[in-house]
Amino acid sequence: IFQVDDWNSIDRIQLERNQQLVDIRFDGIRWYVNDLQADRNMIDVLFATLQQVKPVRPVARVIRDSTRQLLMEQGVKVTLFASENRVMTFFAGGNSRKTQAYLMKEGEEIPYLVAIPGYRVYVSGIFELDGNGWRDKYVFQMNWRNFQGLSAQFLQSPQHNFDVVFFDTYFSIEGMFDADTTKLNNYLDSVSLLTVDAYSADTVELNSLMKTIPDLVLTARDVGGKSYSLSLYLKTDADGQIAGVINQSQLAIFNRKKIEPLLKKRSDFQVSK
Image (cartoon, rainbow, N blue to C red):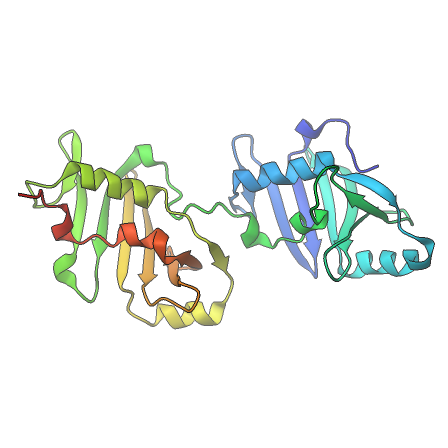
C-alpha cells in the first residue's frame, strides 16, 4: 500500500507538520535538508524505513475516525517526489506512548497500523524529526583535501594560541621548527572528524553565548579562502555536555569527551626531549 515502483527514482521528500516544512532533496551528488548538507546515514535509515514498512492491519473501526483525525491534525504529511513529480503522499503518526505507528494515504479514509517485520521500532519516529535531526553532524563541513590552515585561539589565555600552516610539503605550527608532526596529524584528524551530539534551535541560549567570550575558537581555512569556525564554551553542564557555536550562527551540543582532544595548547606540539 505504501510502496512505489522505483525507489531509486525518489529524489525529494517533504515532511510537513505544524506548518513546519522539512525539505529533503538530492541534487545528483549529495542529499540536502532545507539547503544544508544532510546526514547520509539518516537518509539511508529513511529509505530503509520506507521500503520495509508493512501494514499490519487496518485500525480498528472503533478508533478509526479518531485516528484519522489525529493523523490529519497532528501527524506528519509525507510527500515523495521523482523529478518534481509527486509520486505519493501519506500521513504518519502514532499513539501518545509512541508504541504504535499509523500511516494513511492522502485521499483515503482508512489508517493502518504499520510495522517493520522483525523489528520493534516506532516507525513514524523517523518522519517526526525536525530539520536539525537530518543535518550532517560533522562540524567542519569542508573538503579536507582543500584544507589550507587552522588557527586555535584561547581568548582568555592567548599565550596558548597557535596556527597550523602549510609549509613546503607538510603542515606545521607557525614559528615552531620542532613541532611533533605525529601529534599535529592526530590533532587535525580529531578536528576533521568532530561531530555534534545535537543541534539546538534555542535562540535565547545562542544569543546569550554570542555575548560571552568563548574559551576556544577554532577556525579552519580552505584554499579558496573560505573559513569555517567553532566557538567553544567549556563549562560543562550536569550531563557532561558543553556548548559550541558553529560559524557564529548555529548552536550545537557536544559531549566533553569529544572536545578534549581539541584542547591542545601550543606547547603540546613541541617535540619531547
